[in-house]
Image (cartoon, rainbow, N blue to C red; front, side, top):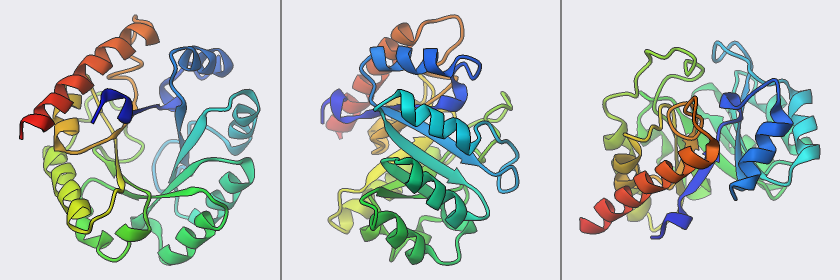
Length: 235
């Protein structure tokens, strides 16, 4: 696997929310083509960074792939809204879904990729029957919506969970993507990549480290990714 096969998905929540267009142009100029967008209802998770209308406006100014992470109690409402806007992938939480297959079919019918998101302590066994239907599994490595709490650390079992999921995917003969979200830092990236992650949601501890440009941060991120890939090859 080459570093280009690892997707860096900048989290728009960590960009300059007062100058979104400027932030997006800066991200695009670095050759990044996936934008991670959190859609939060304020109930499932305690923050609400972007409204639906803001996401509609974003769609008009960029051709980047929109990788949407719905953190809500009413998944169907937000899934429908995102499908209307025209996004490339929607991940929703298994914990707040009663009719998971219904949501999967709803998304797939529109030719959009499906992701299933898991909170840190949710066991992988919940994916037993779902995995073949998923394009991506999004593993939360901190509790949803707490990214603003700088003391919130990545869960201690983060790498173990990624490794176990990677093994599960390989045993089923699938090529499901593993997306990691929450304190995906320059320090934690090598081990996450080694464990099997291939999509990194990049926030305030990687691509948006303050007082450095996106260009500078991306360069250091890529070094961390290469380090992780070489660790994976050594296994």
